[in-house]
Image (cartoon, rainbow over all chains, first blue to last red):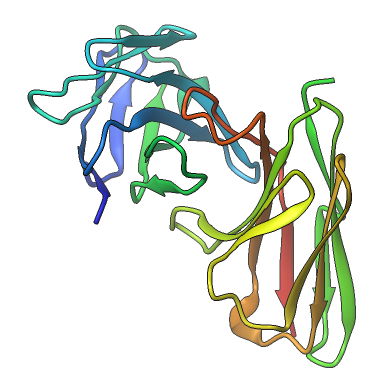
Length: 112
Length: 114
């Protein structure tokens, strides 16, 4: 079945460091891919998305490119801030279905 | 209005109690969802409503009973819960099943069963 694999956390970085959180997926069809962010005590917020191969999603300085050849959707940010500390979930959804497949989440800690 | 509002934010209930969680959205979304999230885990899908009809039940125990009174409201009725049901319950909505749309999540109800 479909699955999403994220890198283990926590990821600890200093402010202004470059961020990469790896995400790879297994899917039978042509899924849409998403990154969600969850701040402490809150629900999930959609961070960015991509619906087809080579699409790049971007938002708030974060970027991810849908790579079909490597089945990956890695999240990147050039310069992280303390306020980016949160848990990041990679997810996919197959066309015509409602069910998201979430990765296990990666906790990011950014130190001042 | 671009929010999903969940009430209450926190709920403590005994194993013999009956309580309800409420979720509301005014974005015209036609799909609404209940998810359960345990600590340090991803959300797990419980129910999906599409156009006010239950379309997916992920084999959830009958002590959880969803209800969609109208296109803006989604309730989750709780009865005879177990301590292991303690979790963050998240409501979400989307414009539909089209894969281009993401979810809009509420902030959740943190449920503790004692």
